[in-house]
Image 1 (cartoon, rainbow, N blue to C red):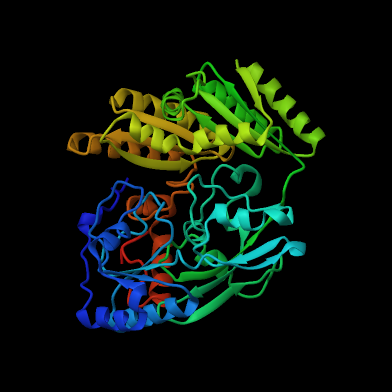
Image 2 (cartoon, helix red, strand yellow):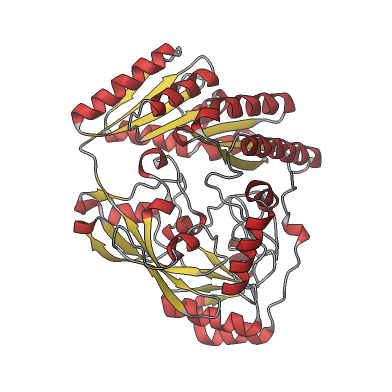
Amino acid sequence: MNAPAHAAQLHPRPAPQALLDALSRRFGAQFSTAQAVREQHGRDEGSIQAPPPAAVVFAESTQDVQDAMRLAAQHEVPVIAYGAGSSLEGHLLAVQGGISIDVGRMNKVLSIDADDLTVTVQPGITRKQLNEAIKDTGLFFPIDPGADASIGGMAATRASGTNAVRYGTMRENVLALEVVTANGGAIRTGTRAKKSSAGYDLTRLMVGSEGTLGIFTEVTVRLYPLPEAVSAAICSFPSIEAAVRTVIQTIQLGVPIARVELIDANSVRMVNAHSKLSLREEPMLLMEFHGSAASVQEQAETVQGIASEFGGQAFEWASTPEERTRLWTARHNAYFAAVQSRPGCKAISTDTCVPISRLADCLLASVDEADASGIPYFLVGHVGDGNFHFGYLIDPAVPEERERAEQLNHRLVARALSMGGTCTGEHGVGVHKMGFLVDETGAGAVDVMRAIKRALDPKNILNPGKIFAL
């Protein structure tokens, strides 16, 4: 098992003053070298540290991105796209120096095609902003990674989240892109049509490329009709195994559940303290059902029956929007609740995904290892598609704790791979999981990825030092 690459092992390339002067002339107030601005754009929600970028450009149009890219290409200086800064694996860190292009001001809805169930947006719009903008159409965008991430960032990392078990991930829901390439050109990939057999599928190549092949300036995504009825429920279990077995049987029976989240007892306790709730401090499933009133009732009754077979109890309904929001807000705040539970700590977050049939085996073995380590942790999972997350809460002043947490991460990934799974279900590779990619795909596949990277970015300036080393 390969060790993950660390930012400190990589070497920055300086940004020459001539480039900074040219950017300042072109962008004026949209350009900054202020230390605070640079530091904001040089960190994400993860635990890896790296020096900040040399400068930040606040793009407001495709032309802005193209001009910044052309100037950077002339000086062979790295460029890192920045959206909402919510990534966890070091995707936006300037590990080889360079400039950050912030697309947060590019947050417009460009066109809504309600009849075709599509919308085209600029990359800086967040998922909450998008759903607010389309709420009067009777449609919604379902991909929910937890954080209010930007659509461009979600496409770049192939994000998914709580609704993926029913609606899929960004891979299935991005139809077309406008992409600024390494030389400052702009290309369009895909169309609004549901399918195509025209040439290479460049859209799928770009989705999940983590900014290493281009910077997205337009994104066309699928929309879905708002369900007639929505109901949420929570159910407590005597053990994690009982909760997971309930999920496995639910999926194998073909129940079209929209969301099913596992929260372990540690996480429930942390969420209770953070969100002032009184949930039973036992392993818990948080579920949501979408459809007609009759189908929602049928789905829920089926799942409730399955849960009872595995000792599920305290099945509690949340039918009003306010009640559902309260529960899902608590779930989305699990990360912050965990960090606050140990003041001054850092969370070493990781995720894996395994075939649903191996989920219980992988989870239970990983829980046993985490318990034996003595490191506080939290566990949450989008278990309907075999994806789960551990967060190890370490004292950054104690190097031994980070080392133990990384060892737990290594064993977790090795276990997932041995069961036919992946090193990351939705976080992406970034910097933290670079070393695991060869273990998962094989050296030959990584060589093909490197060849694509060299062909599209011969100067290696698009978010270098991510996914794999060149």
